[in-house]
Each structure stands twice: as structure tokens, then as C-alpha cells.
Length: 151
Image 1: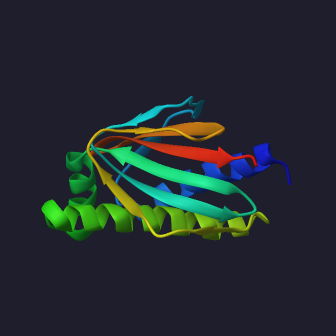
Image 2: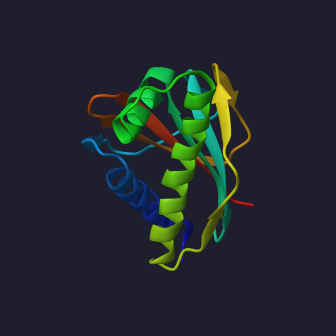
């Protein structure tokens, strides 16, 4: 399968994952090509992709957005270390669900443990990247960045 077909499967799988996991309405915008450096906002989670396609998923937002998502999912406010832990687990849920979805389309993927990033960060070192912006009702806007390693 071609890389462009893999990327389409990943983008579709991400939309599916968001709509499956989140208990709120989501408006996913059109993806765009991203060039380095990517500047992450205040909080995010990075998860590596390995398998038929190698790269990374970065879910980028703010503590307020991740807190609103956590509150909607668990019915209680999250902050501090609990919010950081939730952010990593939220990334795991999205990426794990994505891997299951991709497997149905003959794209074998696995994920690495999440790395939570707090503070503004510049990300370099990727050949190709795509950003999938989404607006989550009652929480705000997140961006999901996919970096693809072509080597």
C-alpha cells in the first residue's frame, strides 16, 4: 500500500477514534501539510508509530482543553499531575483506537508509550507532517500532528 493511502487511513482512523472516545461533538477540519519547526502550544502528548508506517502523533492543546475533555469523560475536574497523566492516557486511547482501525485496512501499526510535553516546544526532525485540527464542543480546539518518517 502506498504512503499516501496509509496517511489517508491514519487521518480517517483519527477522526473515527475521536468520535468513538469523546463524549462530545467534534468538528474536524481539513488536514494540511505542516513544515518544521512545529510549535506546540502549552500541553501535548507525543506517541511514536511503528510498523508499516513510522512516525509520531502529537496531540496539541492547552491544559484547559485537556482538563475539559477529562472532566467530560470522567465527570470530575483534573489538574496538576492528574491532568498530565490523563493527557498521556488520552493520547494512548486515541492512538490505540487508531491502530485497531488501521488494522482493518491492512495497515499494521503499533505505538510507543506516551510522552507528555508541558510548555511551548519546537519540534524538528521530520520529513513530512500533516496537521488535523479539530474543535471539541465545550473544550476548545486541538491539533493532531502526524510526522511521517520516509526513510
